[in-house]
Image (cartoon, rainbow, N blue to C red; front, side, top):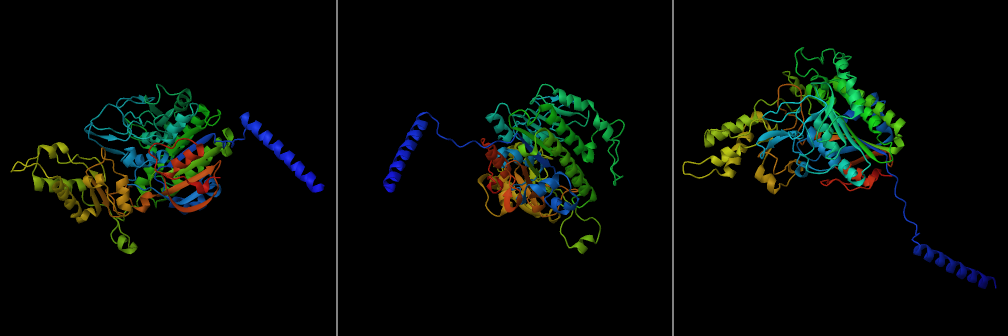
Length: 547
């Protein structure tokens, strides 16, 4: 009897469950997975020229924002850029687009535009005007003081896709450099702001707005640059941030000072307050590029005490920014990601005998690649009315003057043979010992694709057929152009290895030793936000750190 009663009850219960389920389906009340809660604010931070080893070498002195991210965030110890050149515009474009130069079209800080017939920067745009600052006179070549836009970027950014997904979302970019503000924030940014060294204002362009918002005007009215140029850098009295009394750009030296980053951080705070970022019921994006580390690093190199001091100051500024985010948004409601746009080469030894003691390669290059190629072409094909090369188009790339090449005729009337042209140029480069050339890649090679090691891959990723030069040069490791300071542009590890740190909502803290690419950042953030990835992204999702 007991068994029969149990079976009867089970049948009744099963029929009742089916009845409830059927009616729930009919009423459209089936239980659906709840969408994951999204962050209120994404903060993308780029520290310009910040090698990965700055995290480890100066770790004991970090007690602020970097300490917070290193202690409580996801730390990727083997993050690399995969392309060359490794320069500011390229790194900043990859950060929030995930796209290689071969796709994004951002092949350098500047390049020769064959359609415009002039050297252009990555952001210069003479169809626009500067808003809030001095209007530069149009020159034969684009400069960093010209009006700027995102038009030369051929792909979307995370901010663009965020704006496509939500009309309420805001995207703001801040930097000293126009390219540092524009490249990460993208085409549809509500505002991209950079520093004008003539007026000392943070400015924008008509591409983004007709006039500065009230909160930006209030910030500029504080005239902080006029105060900062008077300050002394504690411990480094030789640094002077004043220009001459008749200088047309009285604040030209300020970016190469600790106060350049101070201005960026304070303006970023003002943007959070003025735009109510993360405080309006929508997900917002703020990109901040700390530029002054790069200016100082170029002058003194990665091993100088000034670079250590700048790194510690950056740690302190980040903590100030994070505290405001905690007060206004809550760090538990935000996701912060930090990286660098590139590393930097050590300063070559200059004192006799030092190199033999250290047994390290590297020195300043004693010959000019452009001059060597020009001389070889004149020797082989003769002097022409116009130059064989476009002068000054880039540090690691050479552009043939195609008008000169096209008008050339040999004594027998034949046009120039491209293979012969490239052969002569490459032999001139490789055959000059003072240039310390490791590789030379010709346009025709890269256009069809080269295979090989990571260097060949990096050069392929950095090549865009409409914008790249005819010869791409790779110098031996640790050899740099110039006679003082240092630079970056190479495929070598010291230029490619950078920090990637995540912190905040949905991020699983830990130390992750997998090799990743900076391209992975944009793809990961798009997945976290459940929006369309940027159009040219080639990154992978960093699933190992997502909660």
